[in-house]
Each structure stands twice: as structure tokens, then as C-alpha cells.
Image (cartoon, rainbow, N blue to C red):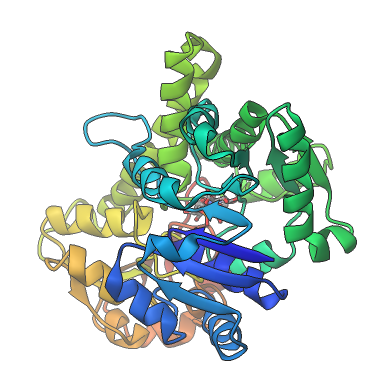
Length: 436
Ligand code: UGA
């Protein structure tokens, strides 16, 4: 099939490369010329395992190209809309300006029978509004939310755990289902569940999924607060809860909480839209989810202050991690970086290290010190804070080796990812978050 993918950020670039890899003829379109040039060279504009390889394969096979000219979308059977929907400045709602601009630019190139498949995370009701706008062209709007995780984006796109498509209740809608089914035929043939809904339900599925995941993380972090007060261990609690298959262990990782370009802004936009619909009370709990999450960052900073007996000013603190999670160079709303910035604000001499995110972090927070080499960051540290659970810290860093580099054997485990007993046995003052 011929496809266009409009917006080549995380979602769009990966989607375009993945669709080409399963045999479709794909054009990726973005207004950012520099990004287009990079993608056209086969270079991933961000850290994402397998993406570069997939891009180069698609380009070499002649099935994938990138452009900034929207006119080149003309002739595609399906247009995937994958632009960003950030949080509005000064509010909690989603900013739809990129969605609106993309639809405006695409409008003159749509033909009767074309399918416009929205993938961006939008407030419920957006698809219906787009459908009204494009109605005169004879094209059909469907909503096809994406559930990929950064760091696993290629895997999640090629082997999703479900495909959801919301369609209008018309004959055009039925035809559009077949177009989407054909787009994903390899995954569907391999047994991926294919769920057809109305437009509003498909839009809600995405917001609800992220709200649920955020709630699960904040739930365990609320338990970490209780565990701290009660002298219990939240990681053992999570293990025990997780064996109940109705609960499950995934997304019960406690520590400094969630960040990134999706969960924080999506739960706020979801609540803002619920308010507009007169149902704010239905999601009041999301405010608590947000508040619990943000408190974790305060808690991590407090643990450092306590471990240093209140004397943080001028002390050297090694911060292991800057990305909002491992296997990513993304620092958007990164709890890791937030902790580093707060410690710096208290006058600490902060040295941040990260296997992938240093350049991004340094561009936004030049006031922090950086070390590309983990051991350089550890050298002479008065305290160590682990804030992103990269394998380099979680698995590969031995307490004895680290102990030979630092000035004080103090470690704050902001991700509850270290073997507390092993660190203590090596003479470290180990503090987790909600761990005895
Ligand atoms: C999230 C969702 O998981 C995807 O399904 C969704 O498609 C995506 O948002 C999106 O809306 O585009 P992502 O932002 O890549 O994906 O990150 P996650 O892997 O979900 O992690 C989010 C944050 O939660 C990270 O800061 C991570 O460290 C934190 N987290 C995750 C925890 O604190 N505990 C956990 O147990 C799991």
C-alpha cells in the first residue's frame, strides 16, 4: 500500500520505518528540514534501538523516503497523522496546533476514498472535529492510537499487543476498516487482536491506557511512602502483590516516579478534557496520581540531604542517569534530571552521567556538571544518586569498584534497582525509596 506519515517525531519516524519494513511504500513528512535530511540519510534523530537499521533498509529498498513537501502525500491510500500534542502553556489541556496545521496542509491533497488515520494522542472529540473539516474531500477519518514505548518503539510497532481502530458508523467507515486491516495485515495474521470501535472510544483508549499506567506507578509510590513510615519494604510488597495475576508486577516499579513526553502531559490533558465534558469528578484521582508522582522527586532530594546530615552546599554529588528511563535519550520531564537540578539549586557540585542523554541534558541545563564516563562522575563523590536504572548502574556497577572511587560510601537508590544487601555488605550507607 502507499502511505504517508505526517509528523516524523518519535511516533511518526518509527511508524514510517516499520511500515516500510513490512513492504509498504511510505513517505514520511515533517516541517523540520534538518530532521527530514537526517532521516533521509538513514540516521535516527533520537536514540532508539533498531531504528537506524530499519530506516536504512527501507531507504535502500526504495520503499521509504522523507520530505518536507506535503504535496508529496498526494496519491497515498492512507495518511497516518503522527504529530505531537504537547501540554498548552499555562494550562493542562493538549495543544492541538500541530494537528490543526497538519490537517490544513493535507486538506488540498486528499482524494475521495483516502483514509486519514490519526495516531496522535488527542482529547476525545478531536477525530469527529477533523472528520467535519475533511468531509468535502470525500476522505474518511479513523483513529488508530499508538501504544509504543520509547526504547522499545520498533518492537512495539511491529509486534503490538493490540491494534485499535475507531471508525465512523458509515459505509465509508467500513471500507476504511479494511484499509487499516490491510496496513497491519502481517501483525493481524500473526494473531494480534484487532479491535474496531467508534471514533470516541478509540481516542479514549489511549488516554485511559496512559492514565491507568500512571495510576499504577503512583499507587506503588504511595505504598512506598507508607512503607517508609511503617518500616516496611515496598519492593518486597510489589513482588508479593505482583504474583496476584489480577494485579501483575509490571508498572509497580517504585522510586522517583514517571516522567517523559507522554504520561505526565497525557494524564493532565485527559483530566482537562473530562472537565470540559462536565465529568471532572470522574478523574479527580488523576490529580493525586500527579501529586504523588511529583512528591517522589522531593523525597529523593530529602534523602540526599539527610544522608549528608543537612550539609549539601559545596558537596560533590554523582547523579547516575539523566534520561527519563533507560534505553532512551529523552529528557522531557525527566524525574532524574529534575532531582539533579534541585540538588544543584541547593548548592551541590552535581556531576551527571548517562549513557545516552548527556548532550540533550547539557543543552537544557548547562549549569550542571557532566561526565561521559561513569567512573569520572563517581570519583571523589560525597554521595551517589541513581536516578535512571540503566544496566550500566543497576547491573554492571559493583559496590567494591564504586567504593574505590568515591569519597563517601553513600548511595541513594532512586529507582530501587540495586541489591541493597550487596551495597551494604561493601560498606555503603544505602538508602532506597520505601525500602528498609
Ligand atoms: C508510555 C506508555 O507506556 C506507552 O504505552 C505509550 O504509547 C507512550 O507512553 C505514549 O503515550 O506515547 P513511555 O513514555 O515510552 O511510554 O514510557 P514508559 O516505559 O511507560 O515509562 C514512563 C515513565 O514511567 C518512565 O519515567 C519510567 O521510569 C516510569 N516507570 C515505569 C516507573 O516509574 N515505574 C514503572 O514500574 C514503570
